[in-house]
Length: 564
Ligand SMILES: [Zn+2]
Image 1 (cartoon, helix red, strand yellow):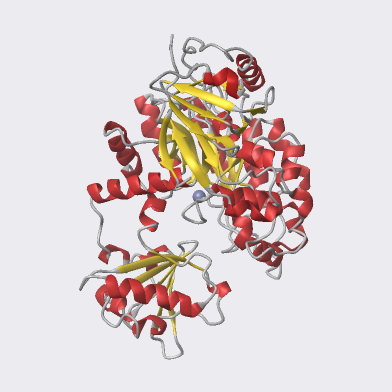
Image 2 (cartoon, rainbow, N blue to C red):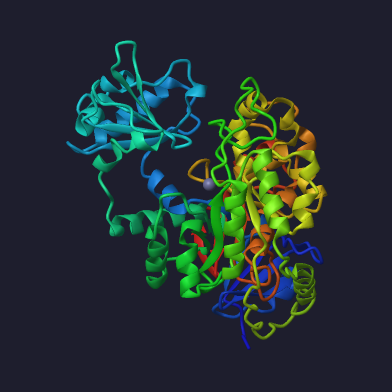
């Protein structure tokens, strides 16, 4: 039984995300858990001499946010590089690269990423880098990572000349005379250069991860669902475990494992949920199709203006079925990347035919709601440890376009839509172009919700910015950062602020089987919270993206505090 609170946040506008009691003034934490939620008077009663008190000054407090789709190690690495994300001015690209080249030691490579030639008035080529980096090798990855733009110094180091043939399933762009222009298309071409890049040591990567975690705190994130990338092995998991041992893993990490490792996981008897309150095994991740931007998303009808292009089945339906059956046998639920409407349909087809698993969610949430009614005045005893999760709900990553006939089917089979509204900021014109009228059902957040689908929101960082305020802004306004289109893109699909916040809190907690300890501000839950500079519920929606985090509390400790 706890005598006094370690930390009290008071004089706040607390949005608890607990439907039984959505708003409160103050919250107390002890030993990493929330122990009381209520009025200032009620909660301040629990203050002792050693209690840290934070006057929130009437600001909005939310549960700590969880990004349900992030490639965190990639993010940690990319943020060390030159960011070209969203840069519309070509001269600005050159200016940023030149700055990095000037700082680089002799022989060092300059790396950058995130560019999108659709934003520019000219195509990228080595020639535009050679005058600013005549000797320093420069490598710039496109935002989708499928194309690299390199300068002549990099090609020279990699031994790429006009005699170099195109590697299989990939291409070196060439000028009229057959000379490589510095654009490497797809992995086998990229691999001509990639082995020449310096490989950061584990110690370096751990340092970068710590910096990335600090950045996550600055953005209000206290949890992530880490999505594996293809071709990535054990590195991320080992580094997270090293951080955990060092006591530096100040994030709740739901660690998905790659489908390629199912056999090993099954042989070991490894089960989802295994781990502790910082790091646990999550879903089994696989890919049904490609992407919208590269026109490889798998479609029921062909891409606009490309009558023969129905996209690409990365995992065909029969292989997906095999995987799902084996995963189920091993106790794993699936996390399937599906962007096109046919990919989404096929994933639902497969998952719907699996023998059903008991989800038990409604009752768990009801219990959680009841727990909120007690413990306003005195600190309750520590709650029993959460039940080990049965199976997690299955999840589809992205669901970027869905056929209206399939809208009711996700909730019917308990499948969660893990979506990334922040993609809207850059992608809505492309969606209009490649999907035409089908875009009416692209990023169809409200339609999904109204059909009873649970949503978990994320960023897909480093493919998009990690900042959850941008995600909430995009979901609520359906406009890009320049306010386009004026009335919002298919505005009937907007979410409310409360729904978007739910998608960053209880949504991911439910998906990870952690709804009894995470996702709301209620007694018994992990003490993860954020104080925001602006009240998202009261400001004009176009200002949401400017909201900043004032304080982030993780496990009952202040891990970030801005100048207040
Ligand atoms: Zn991703």
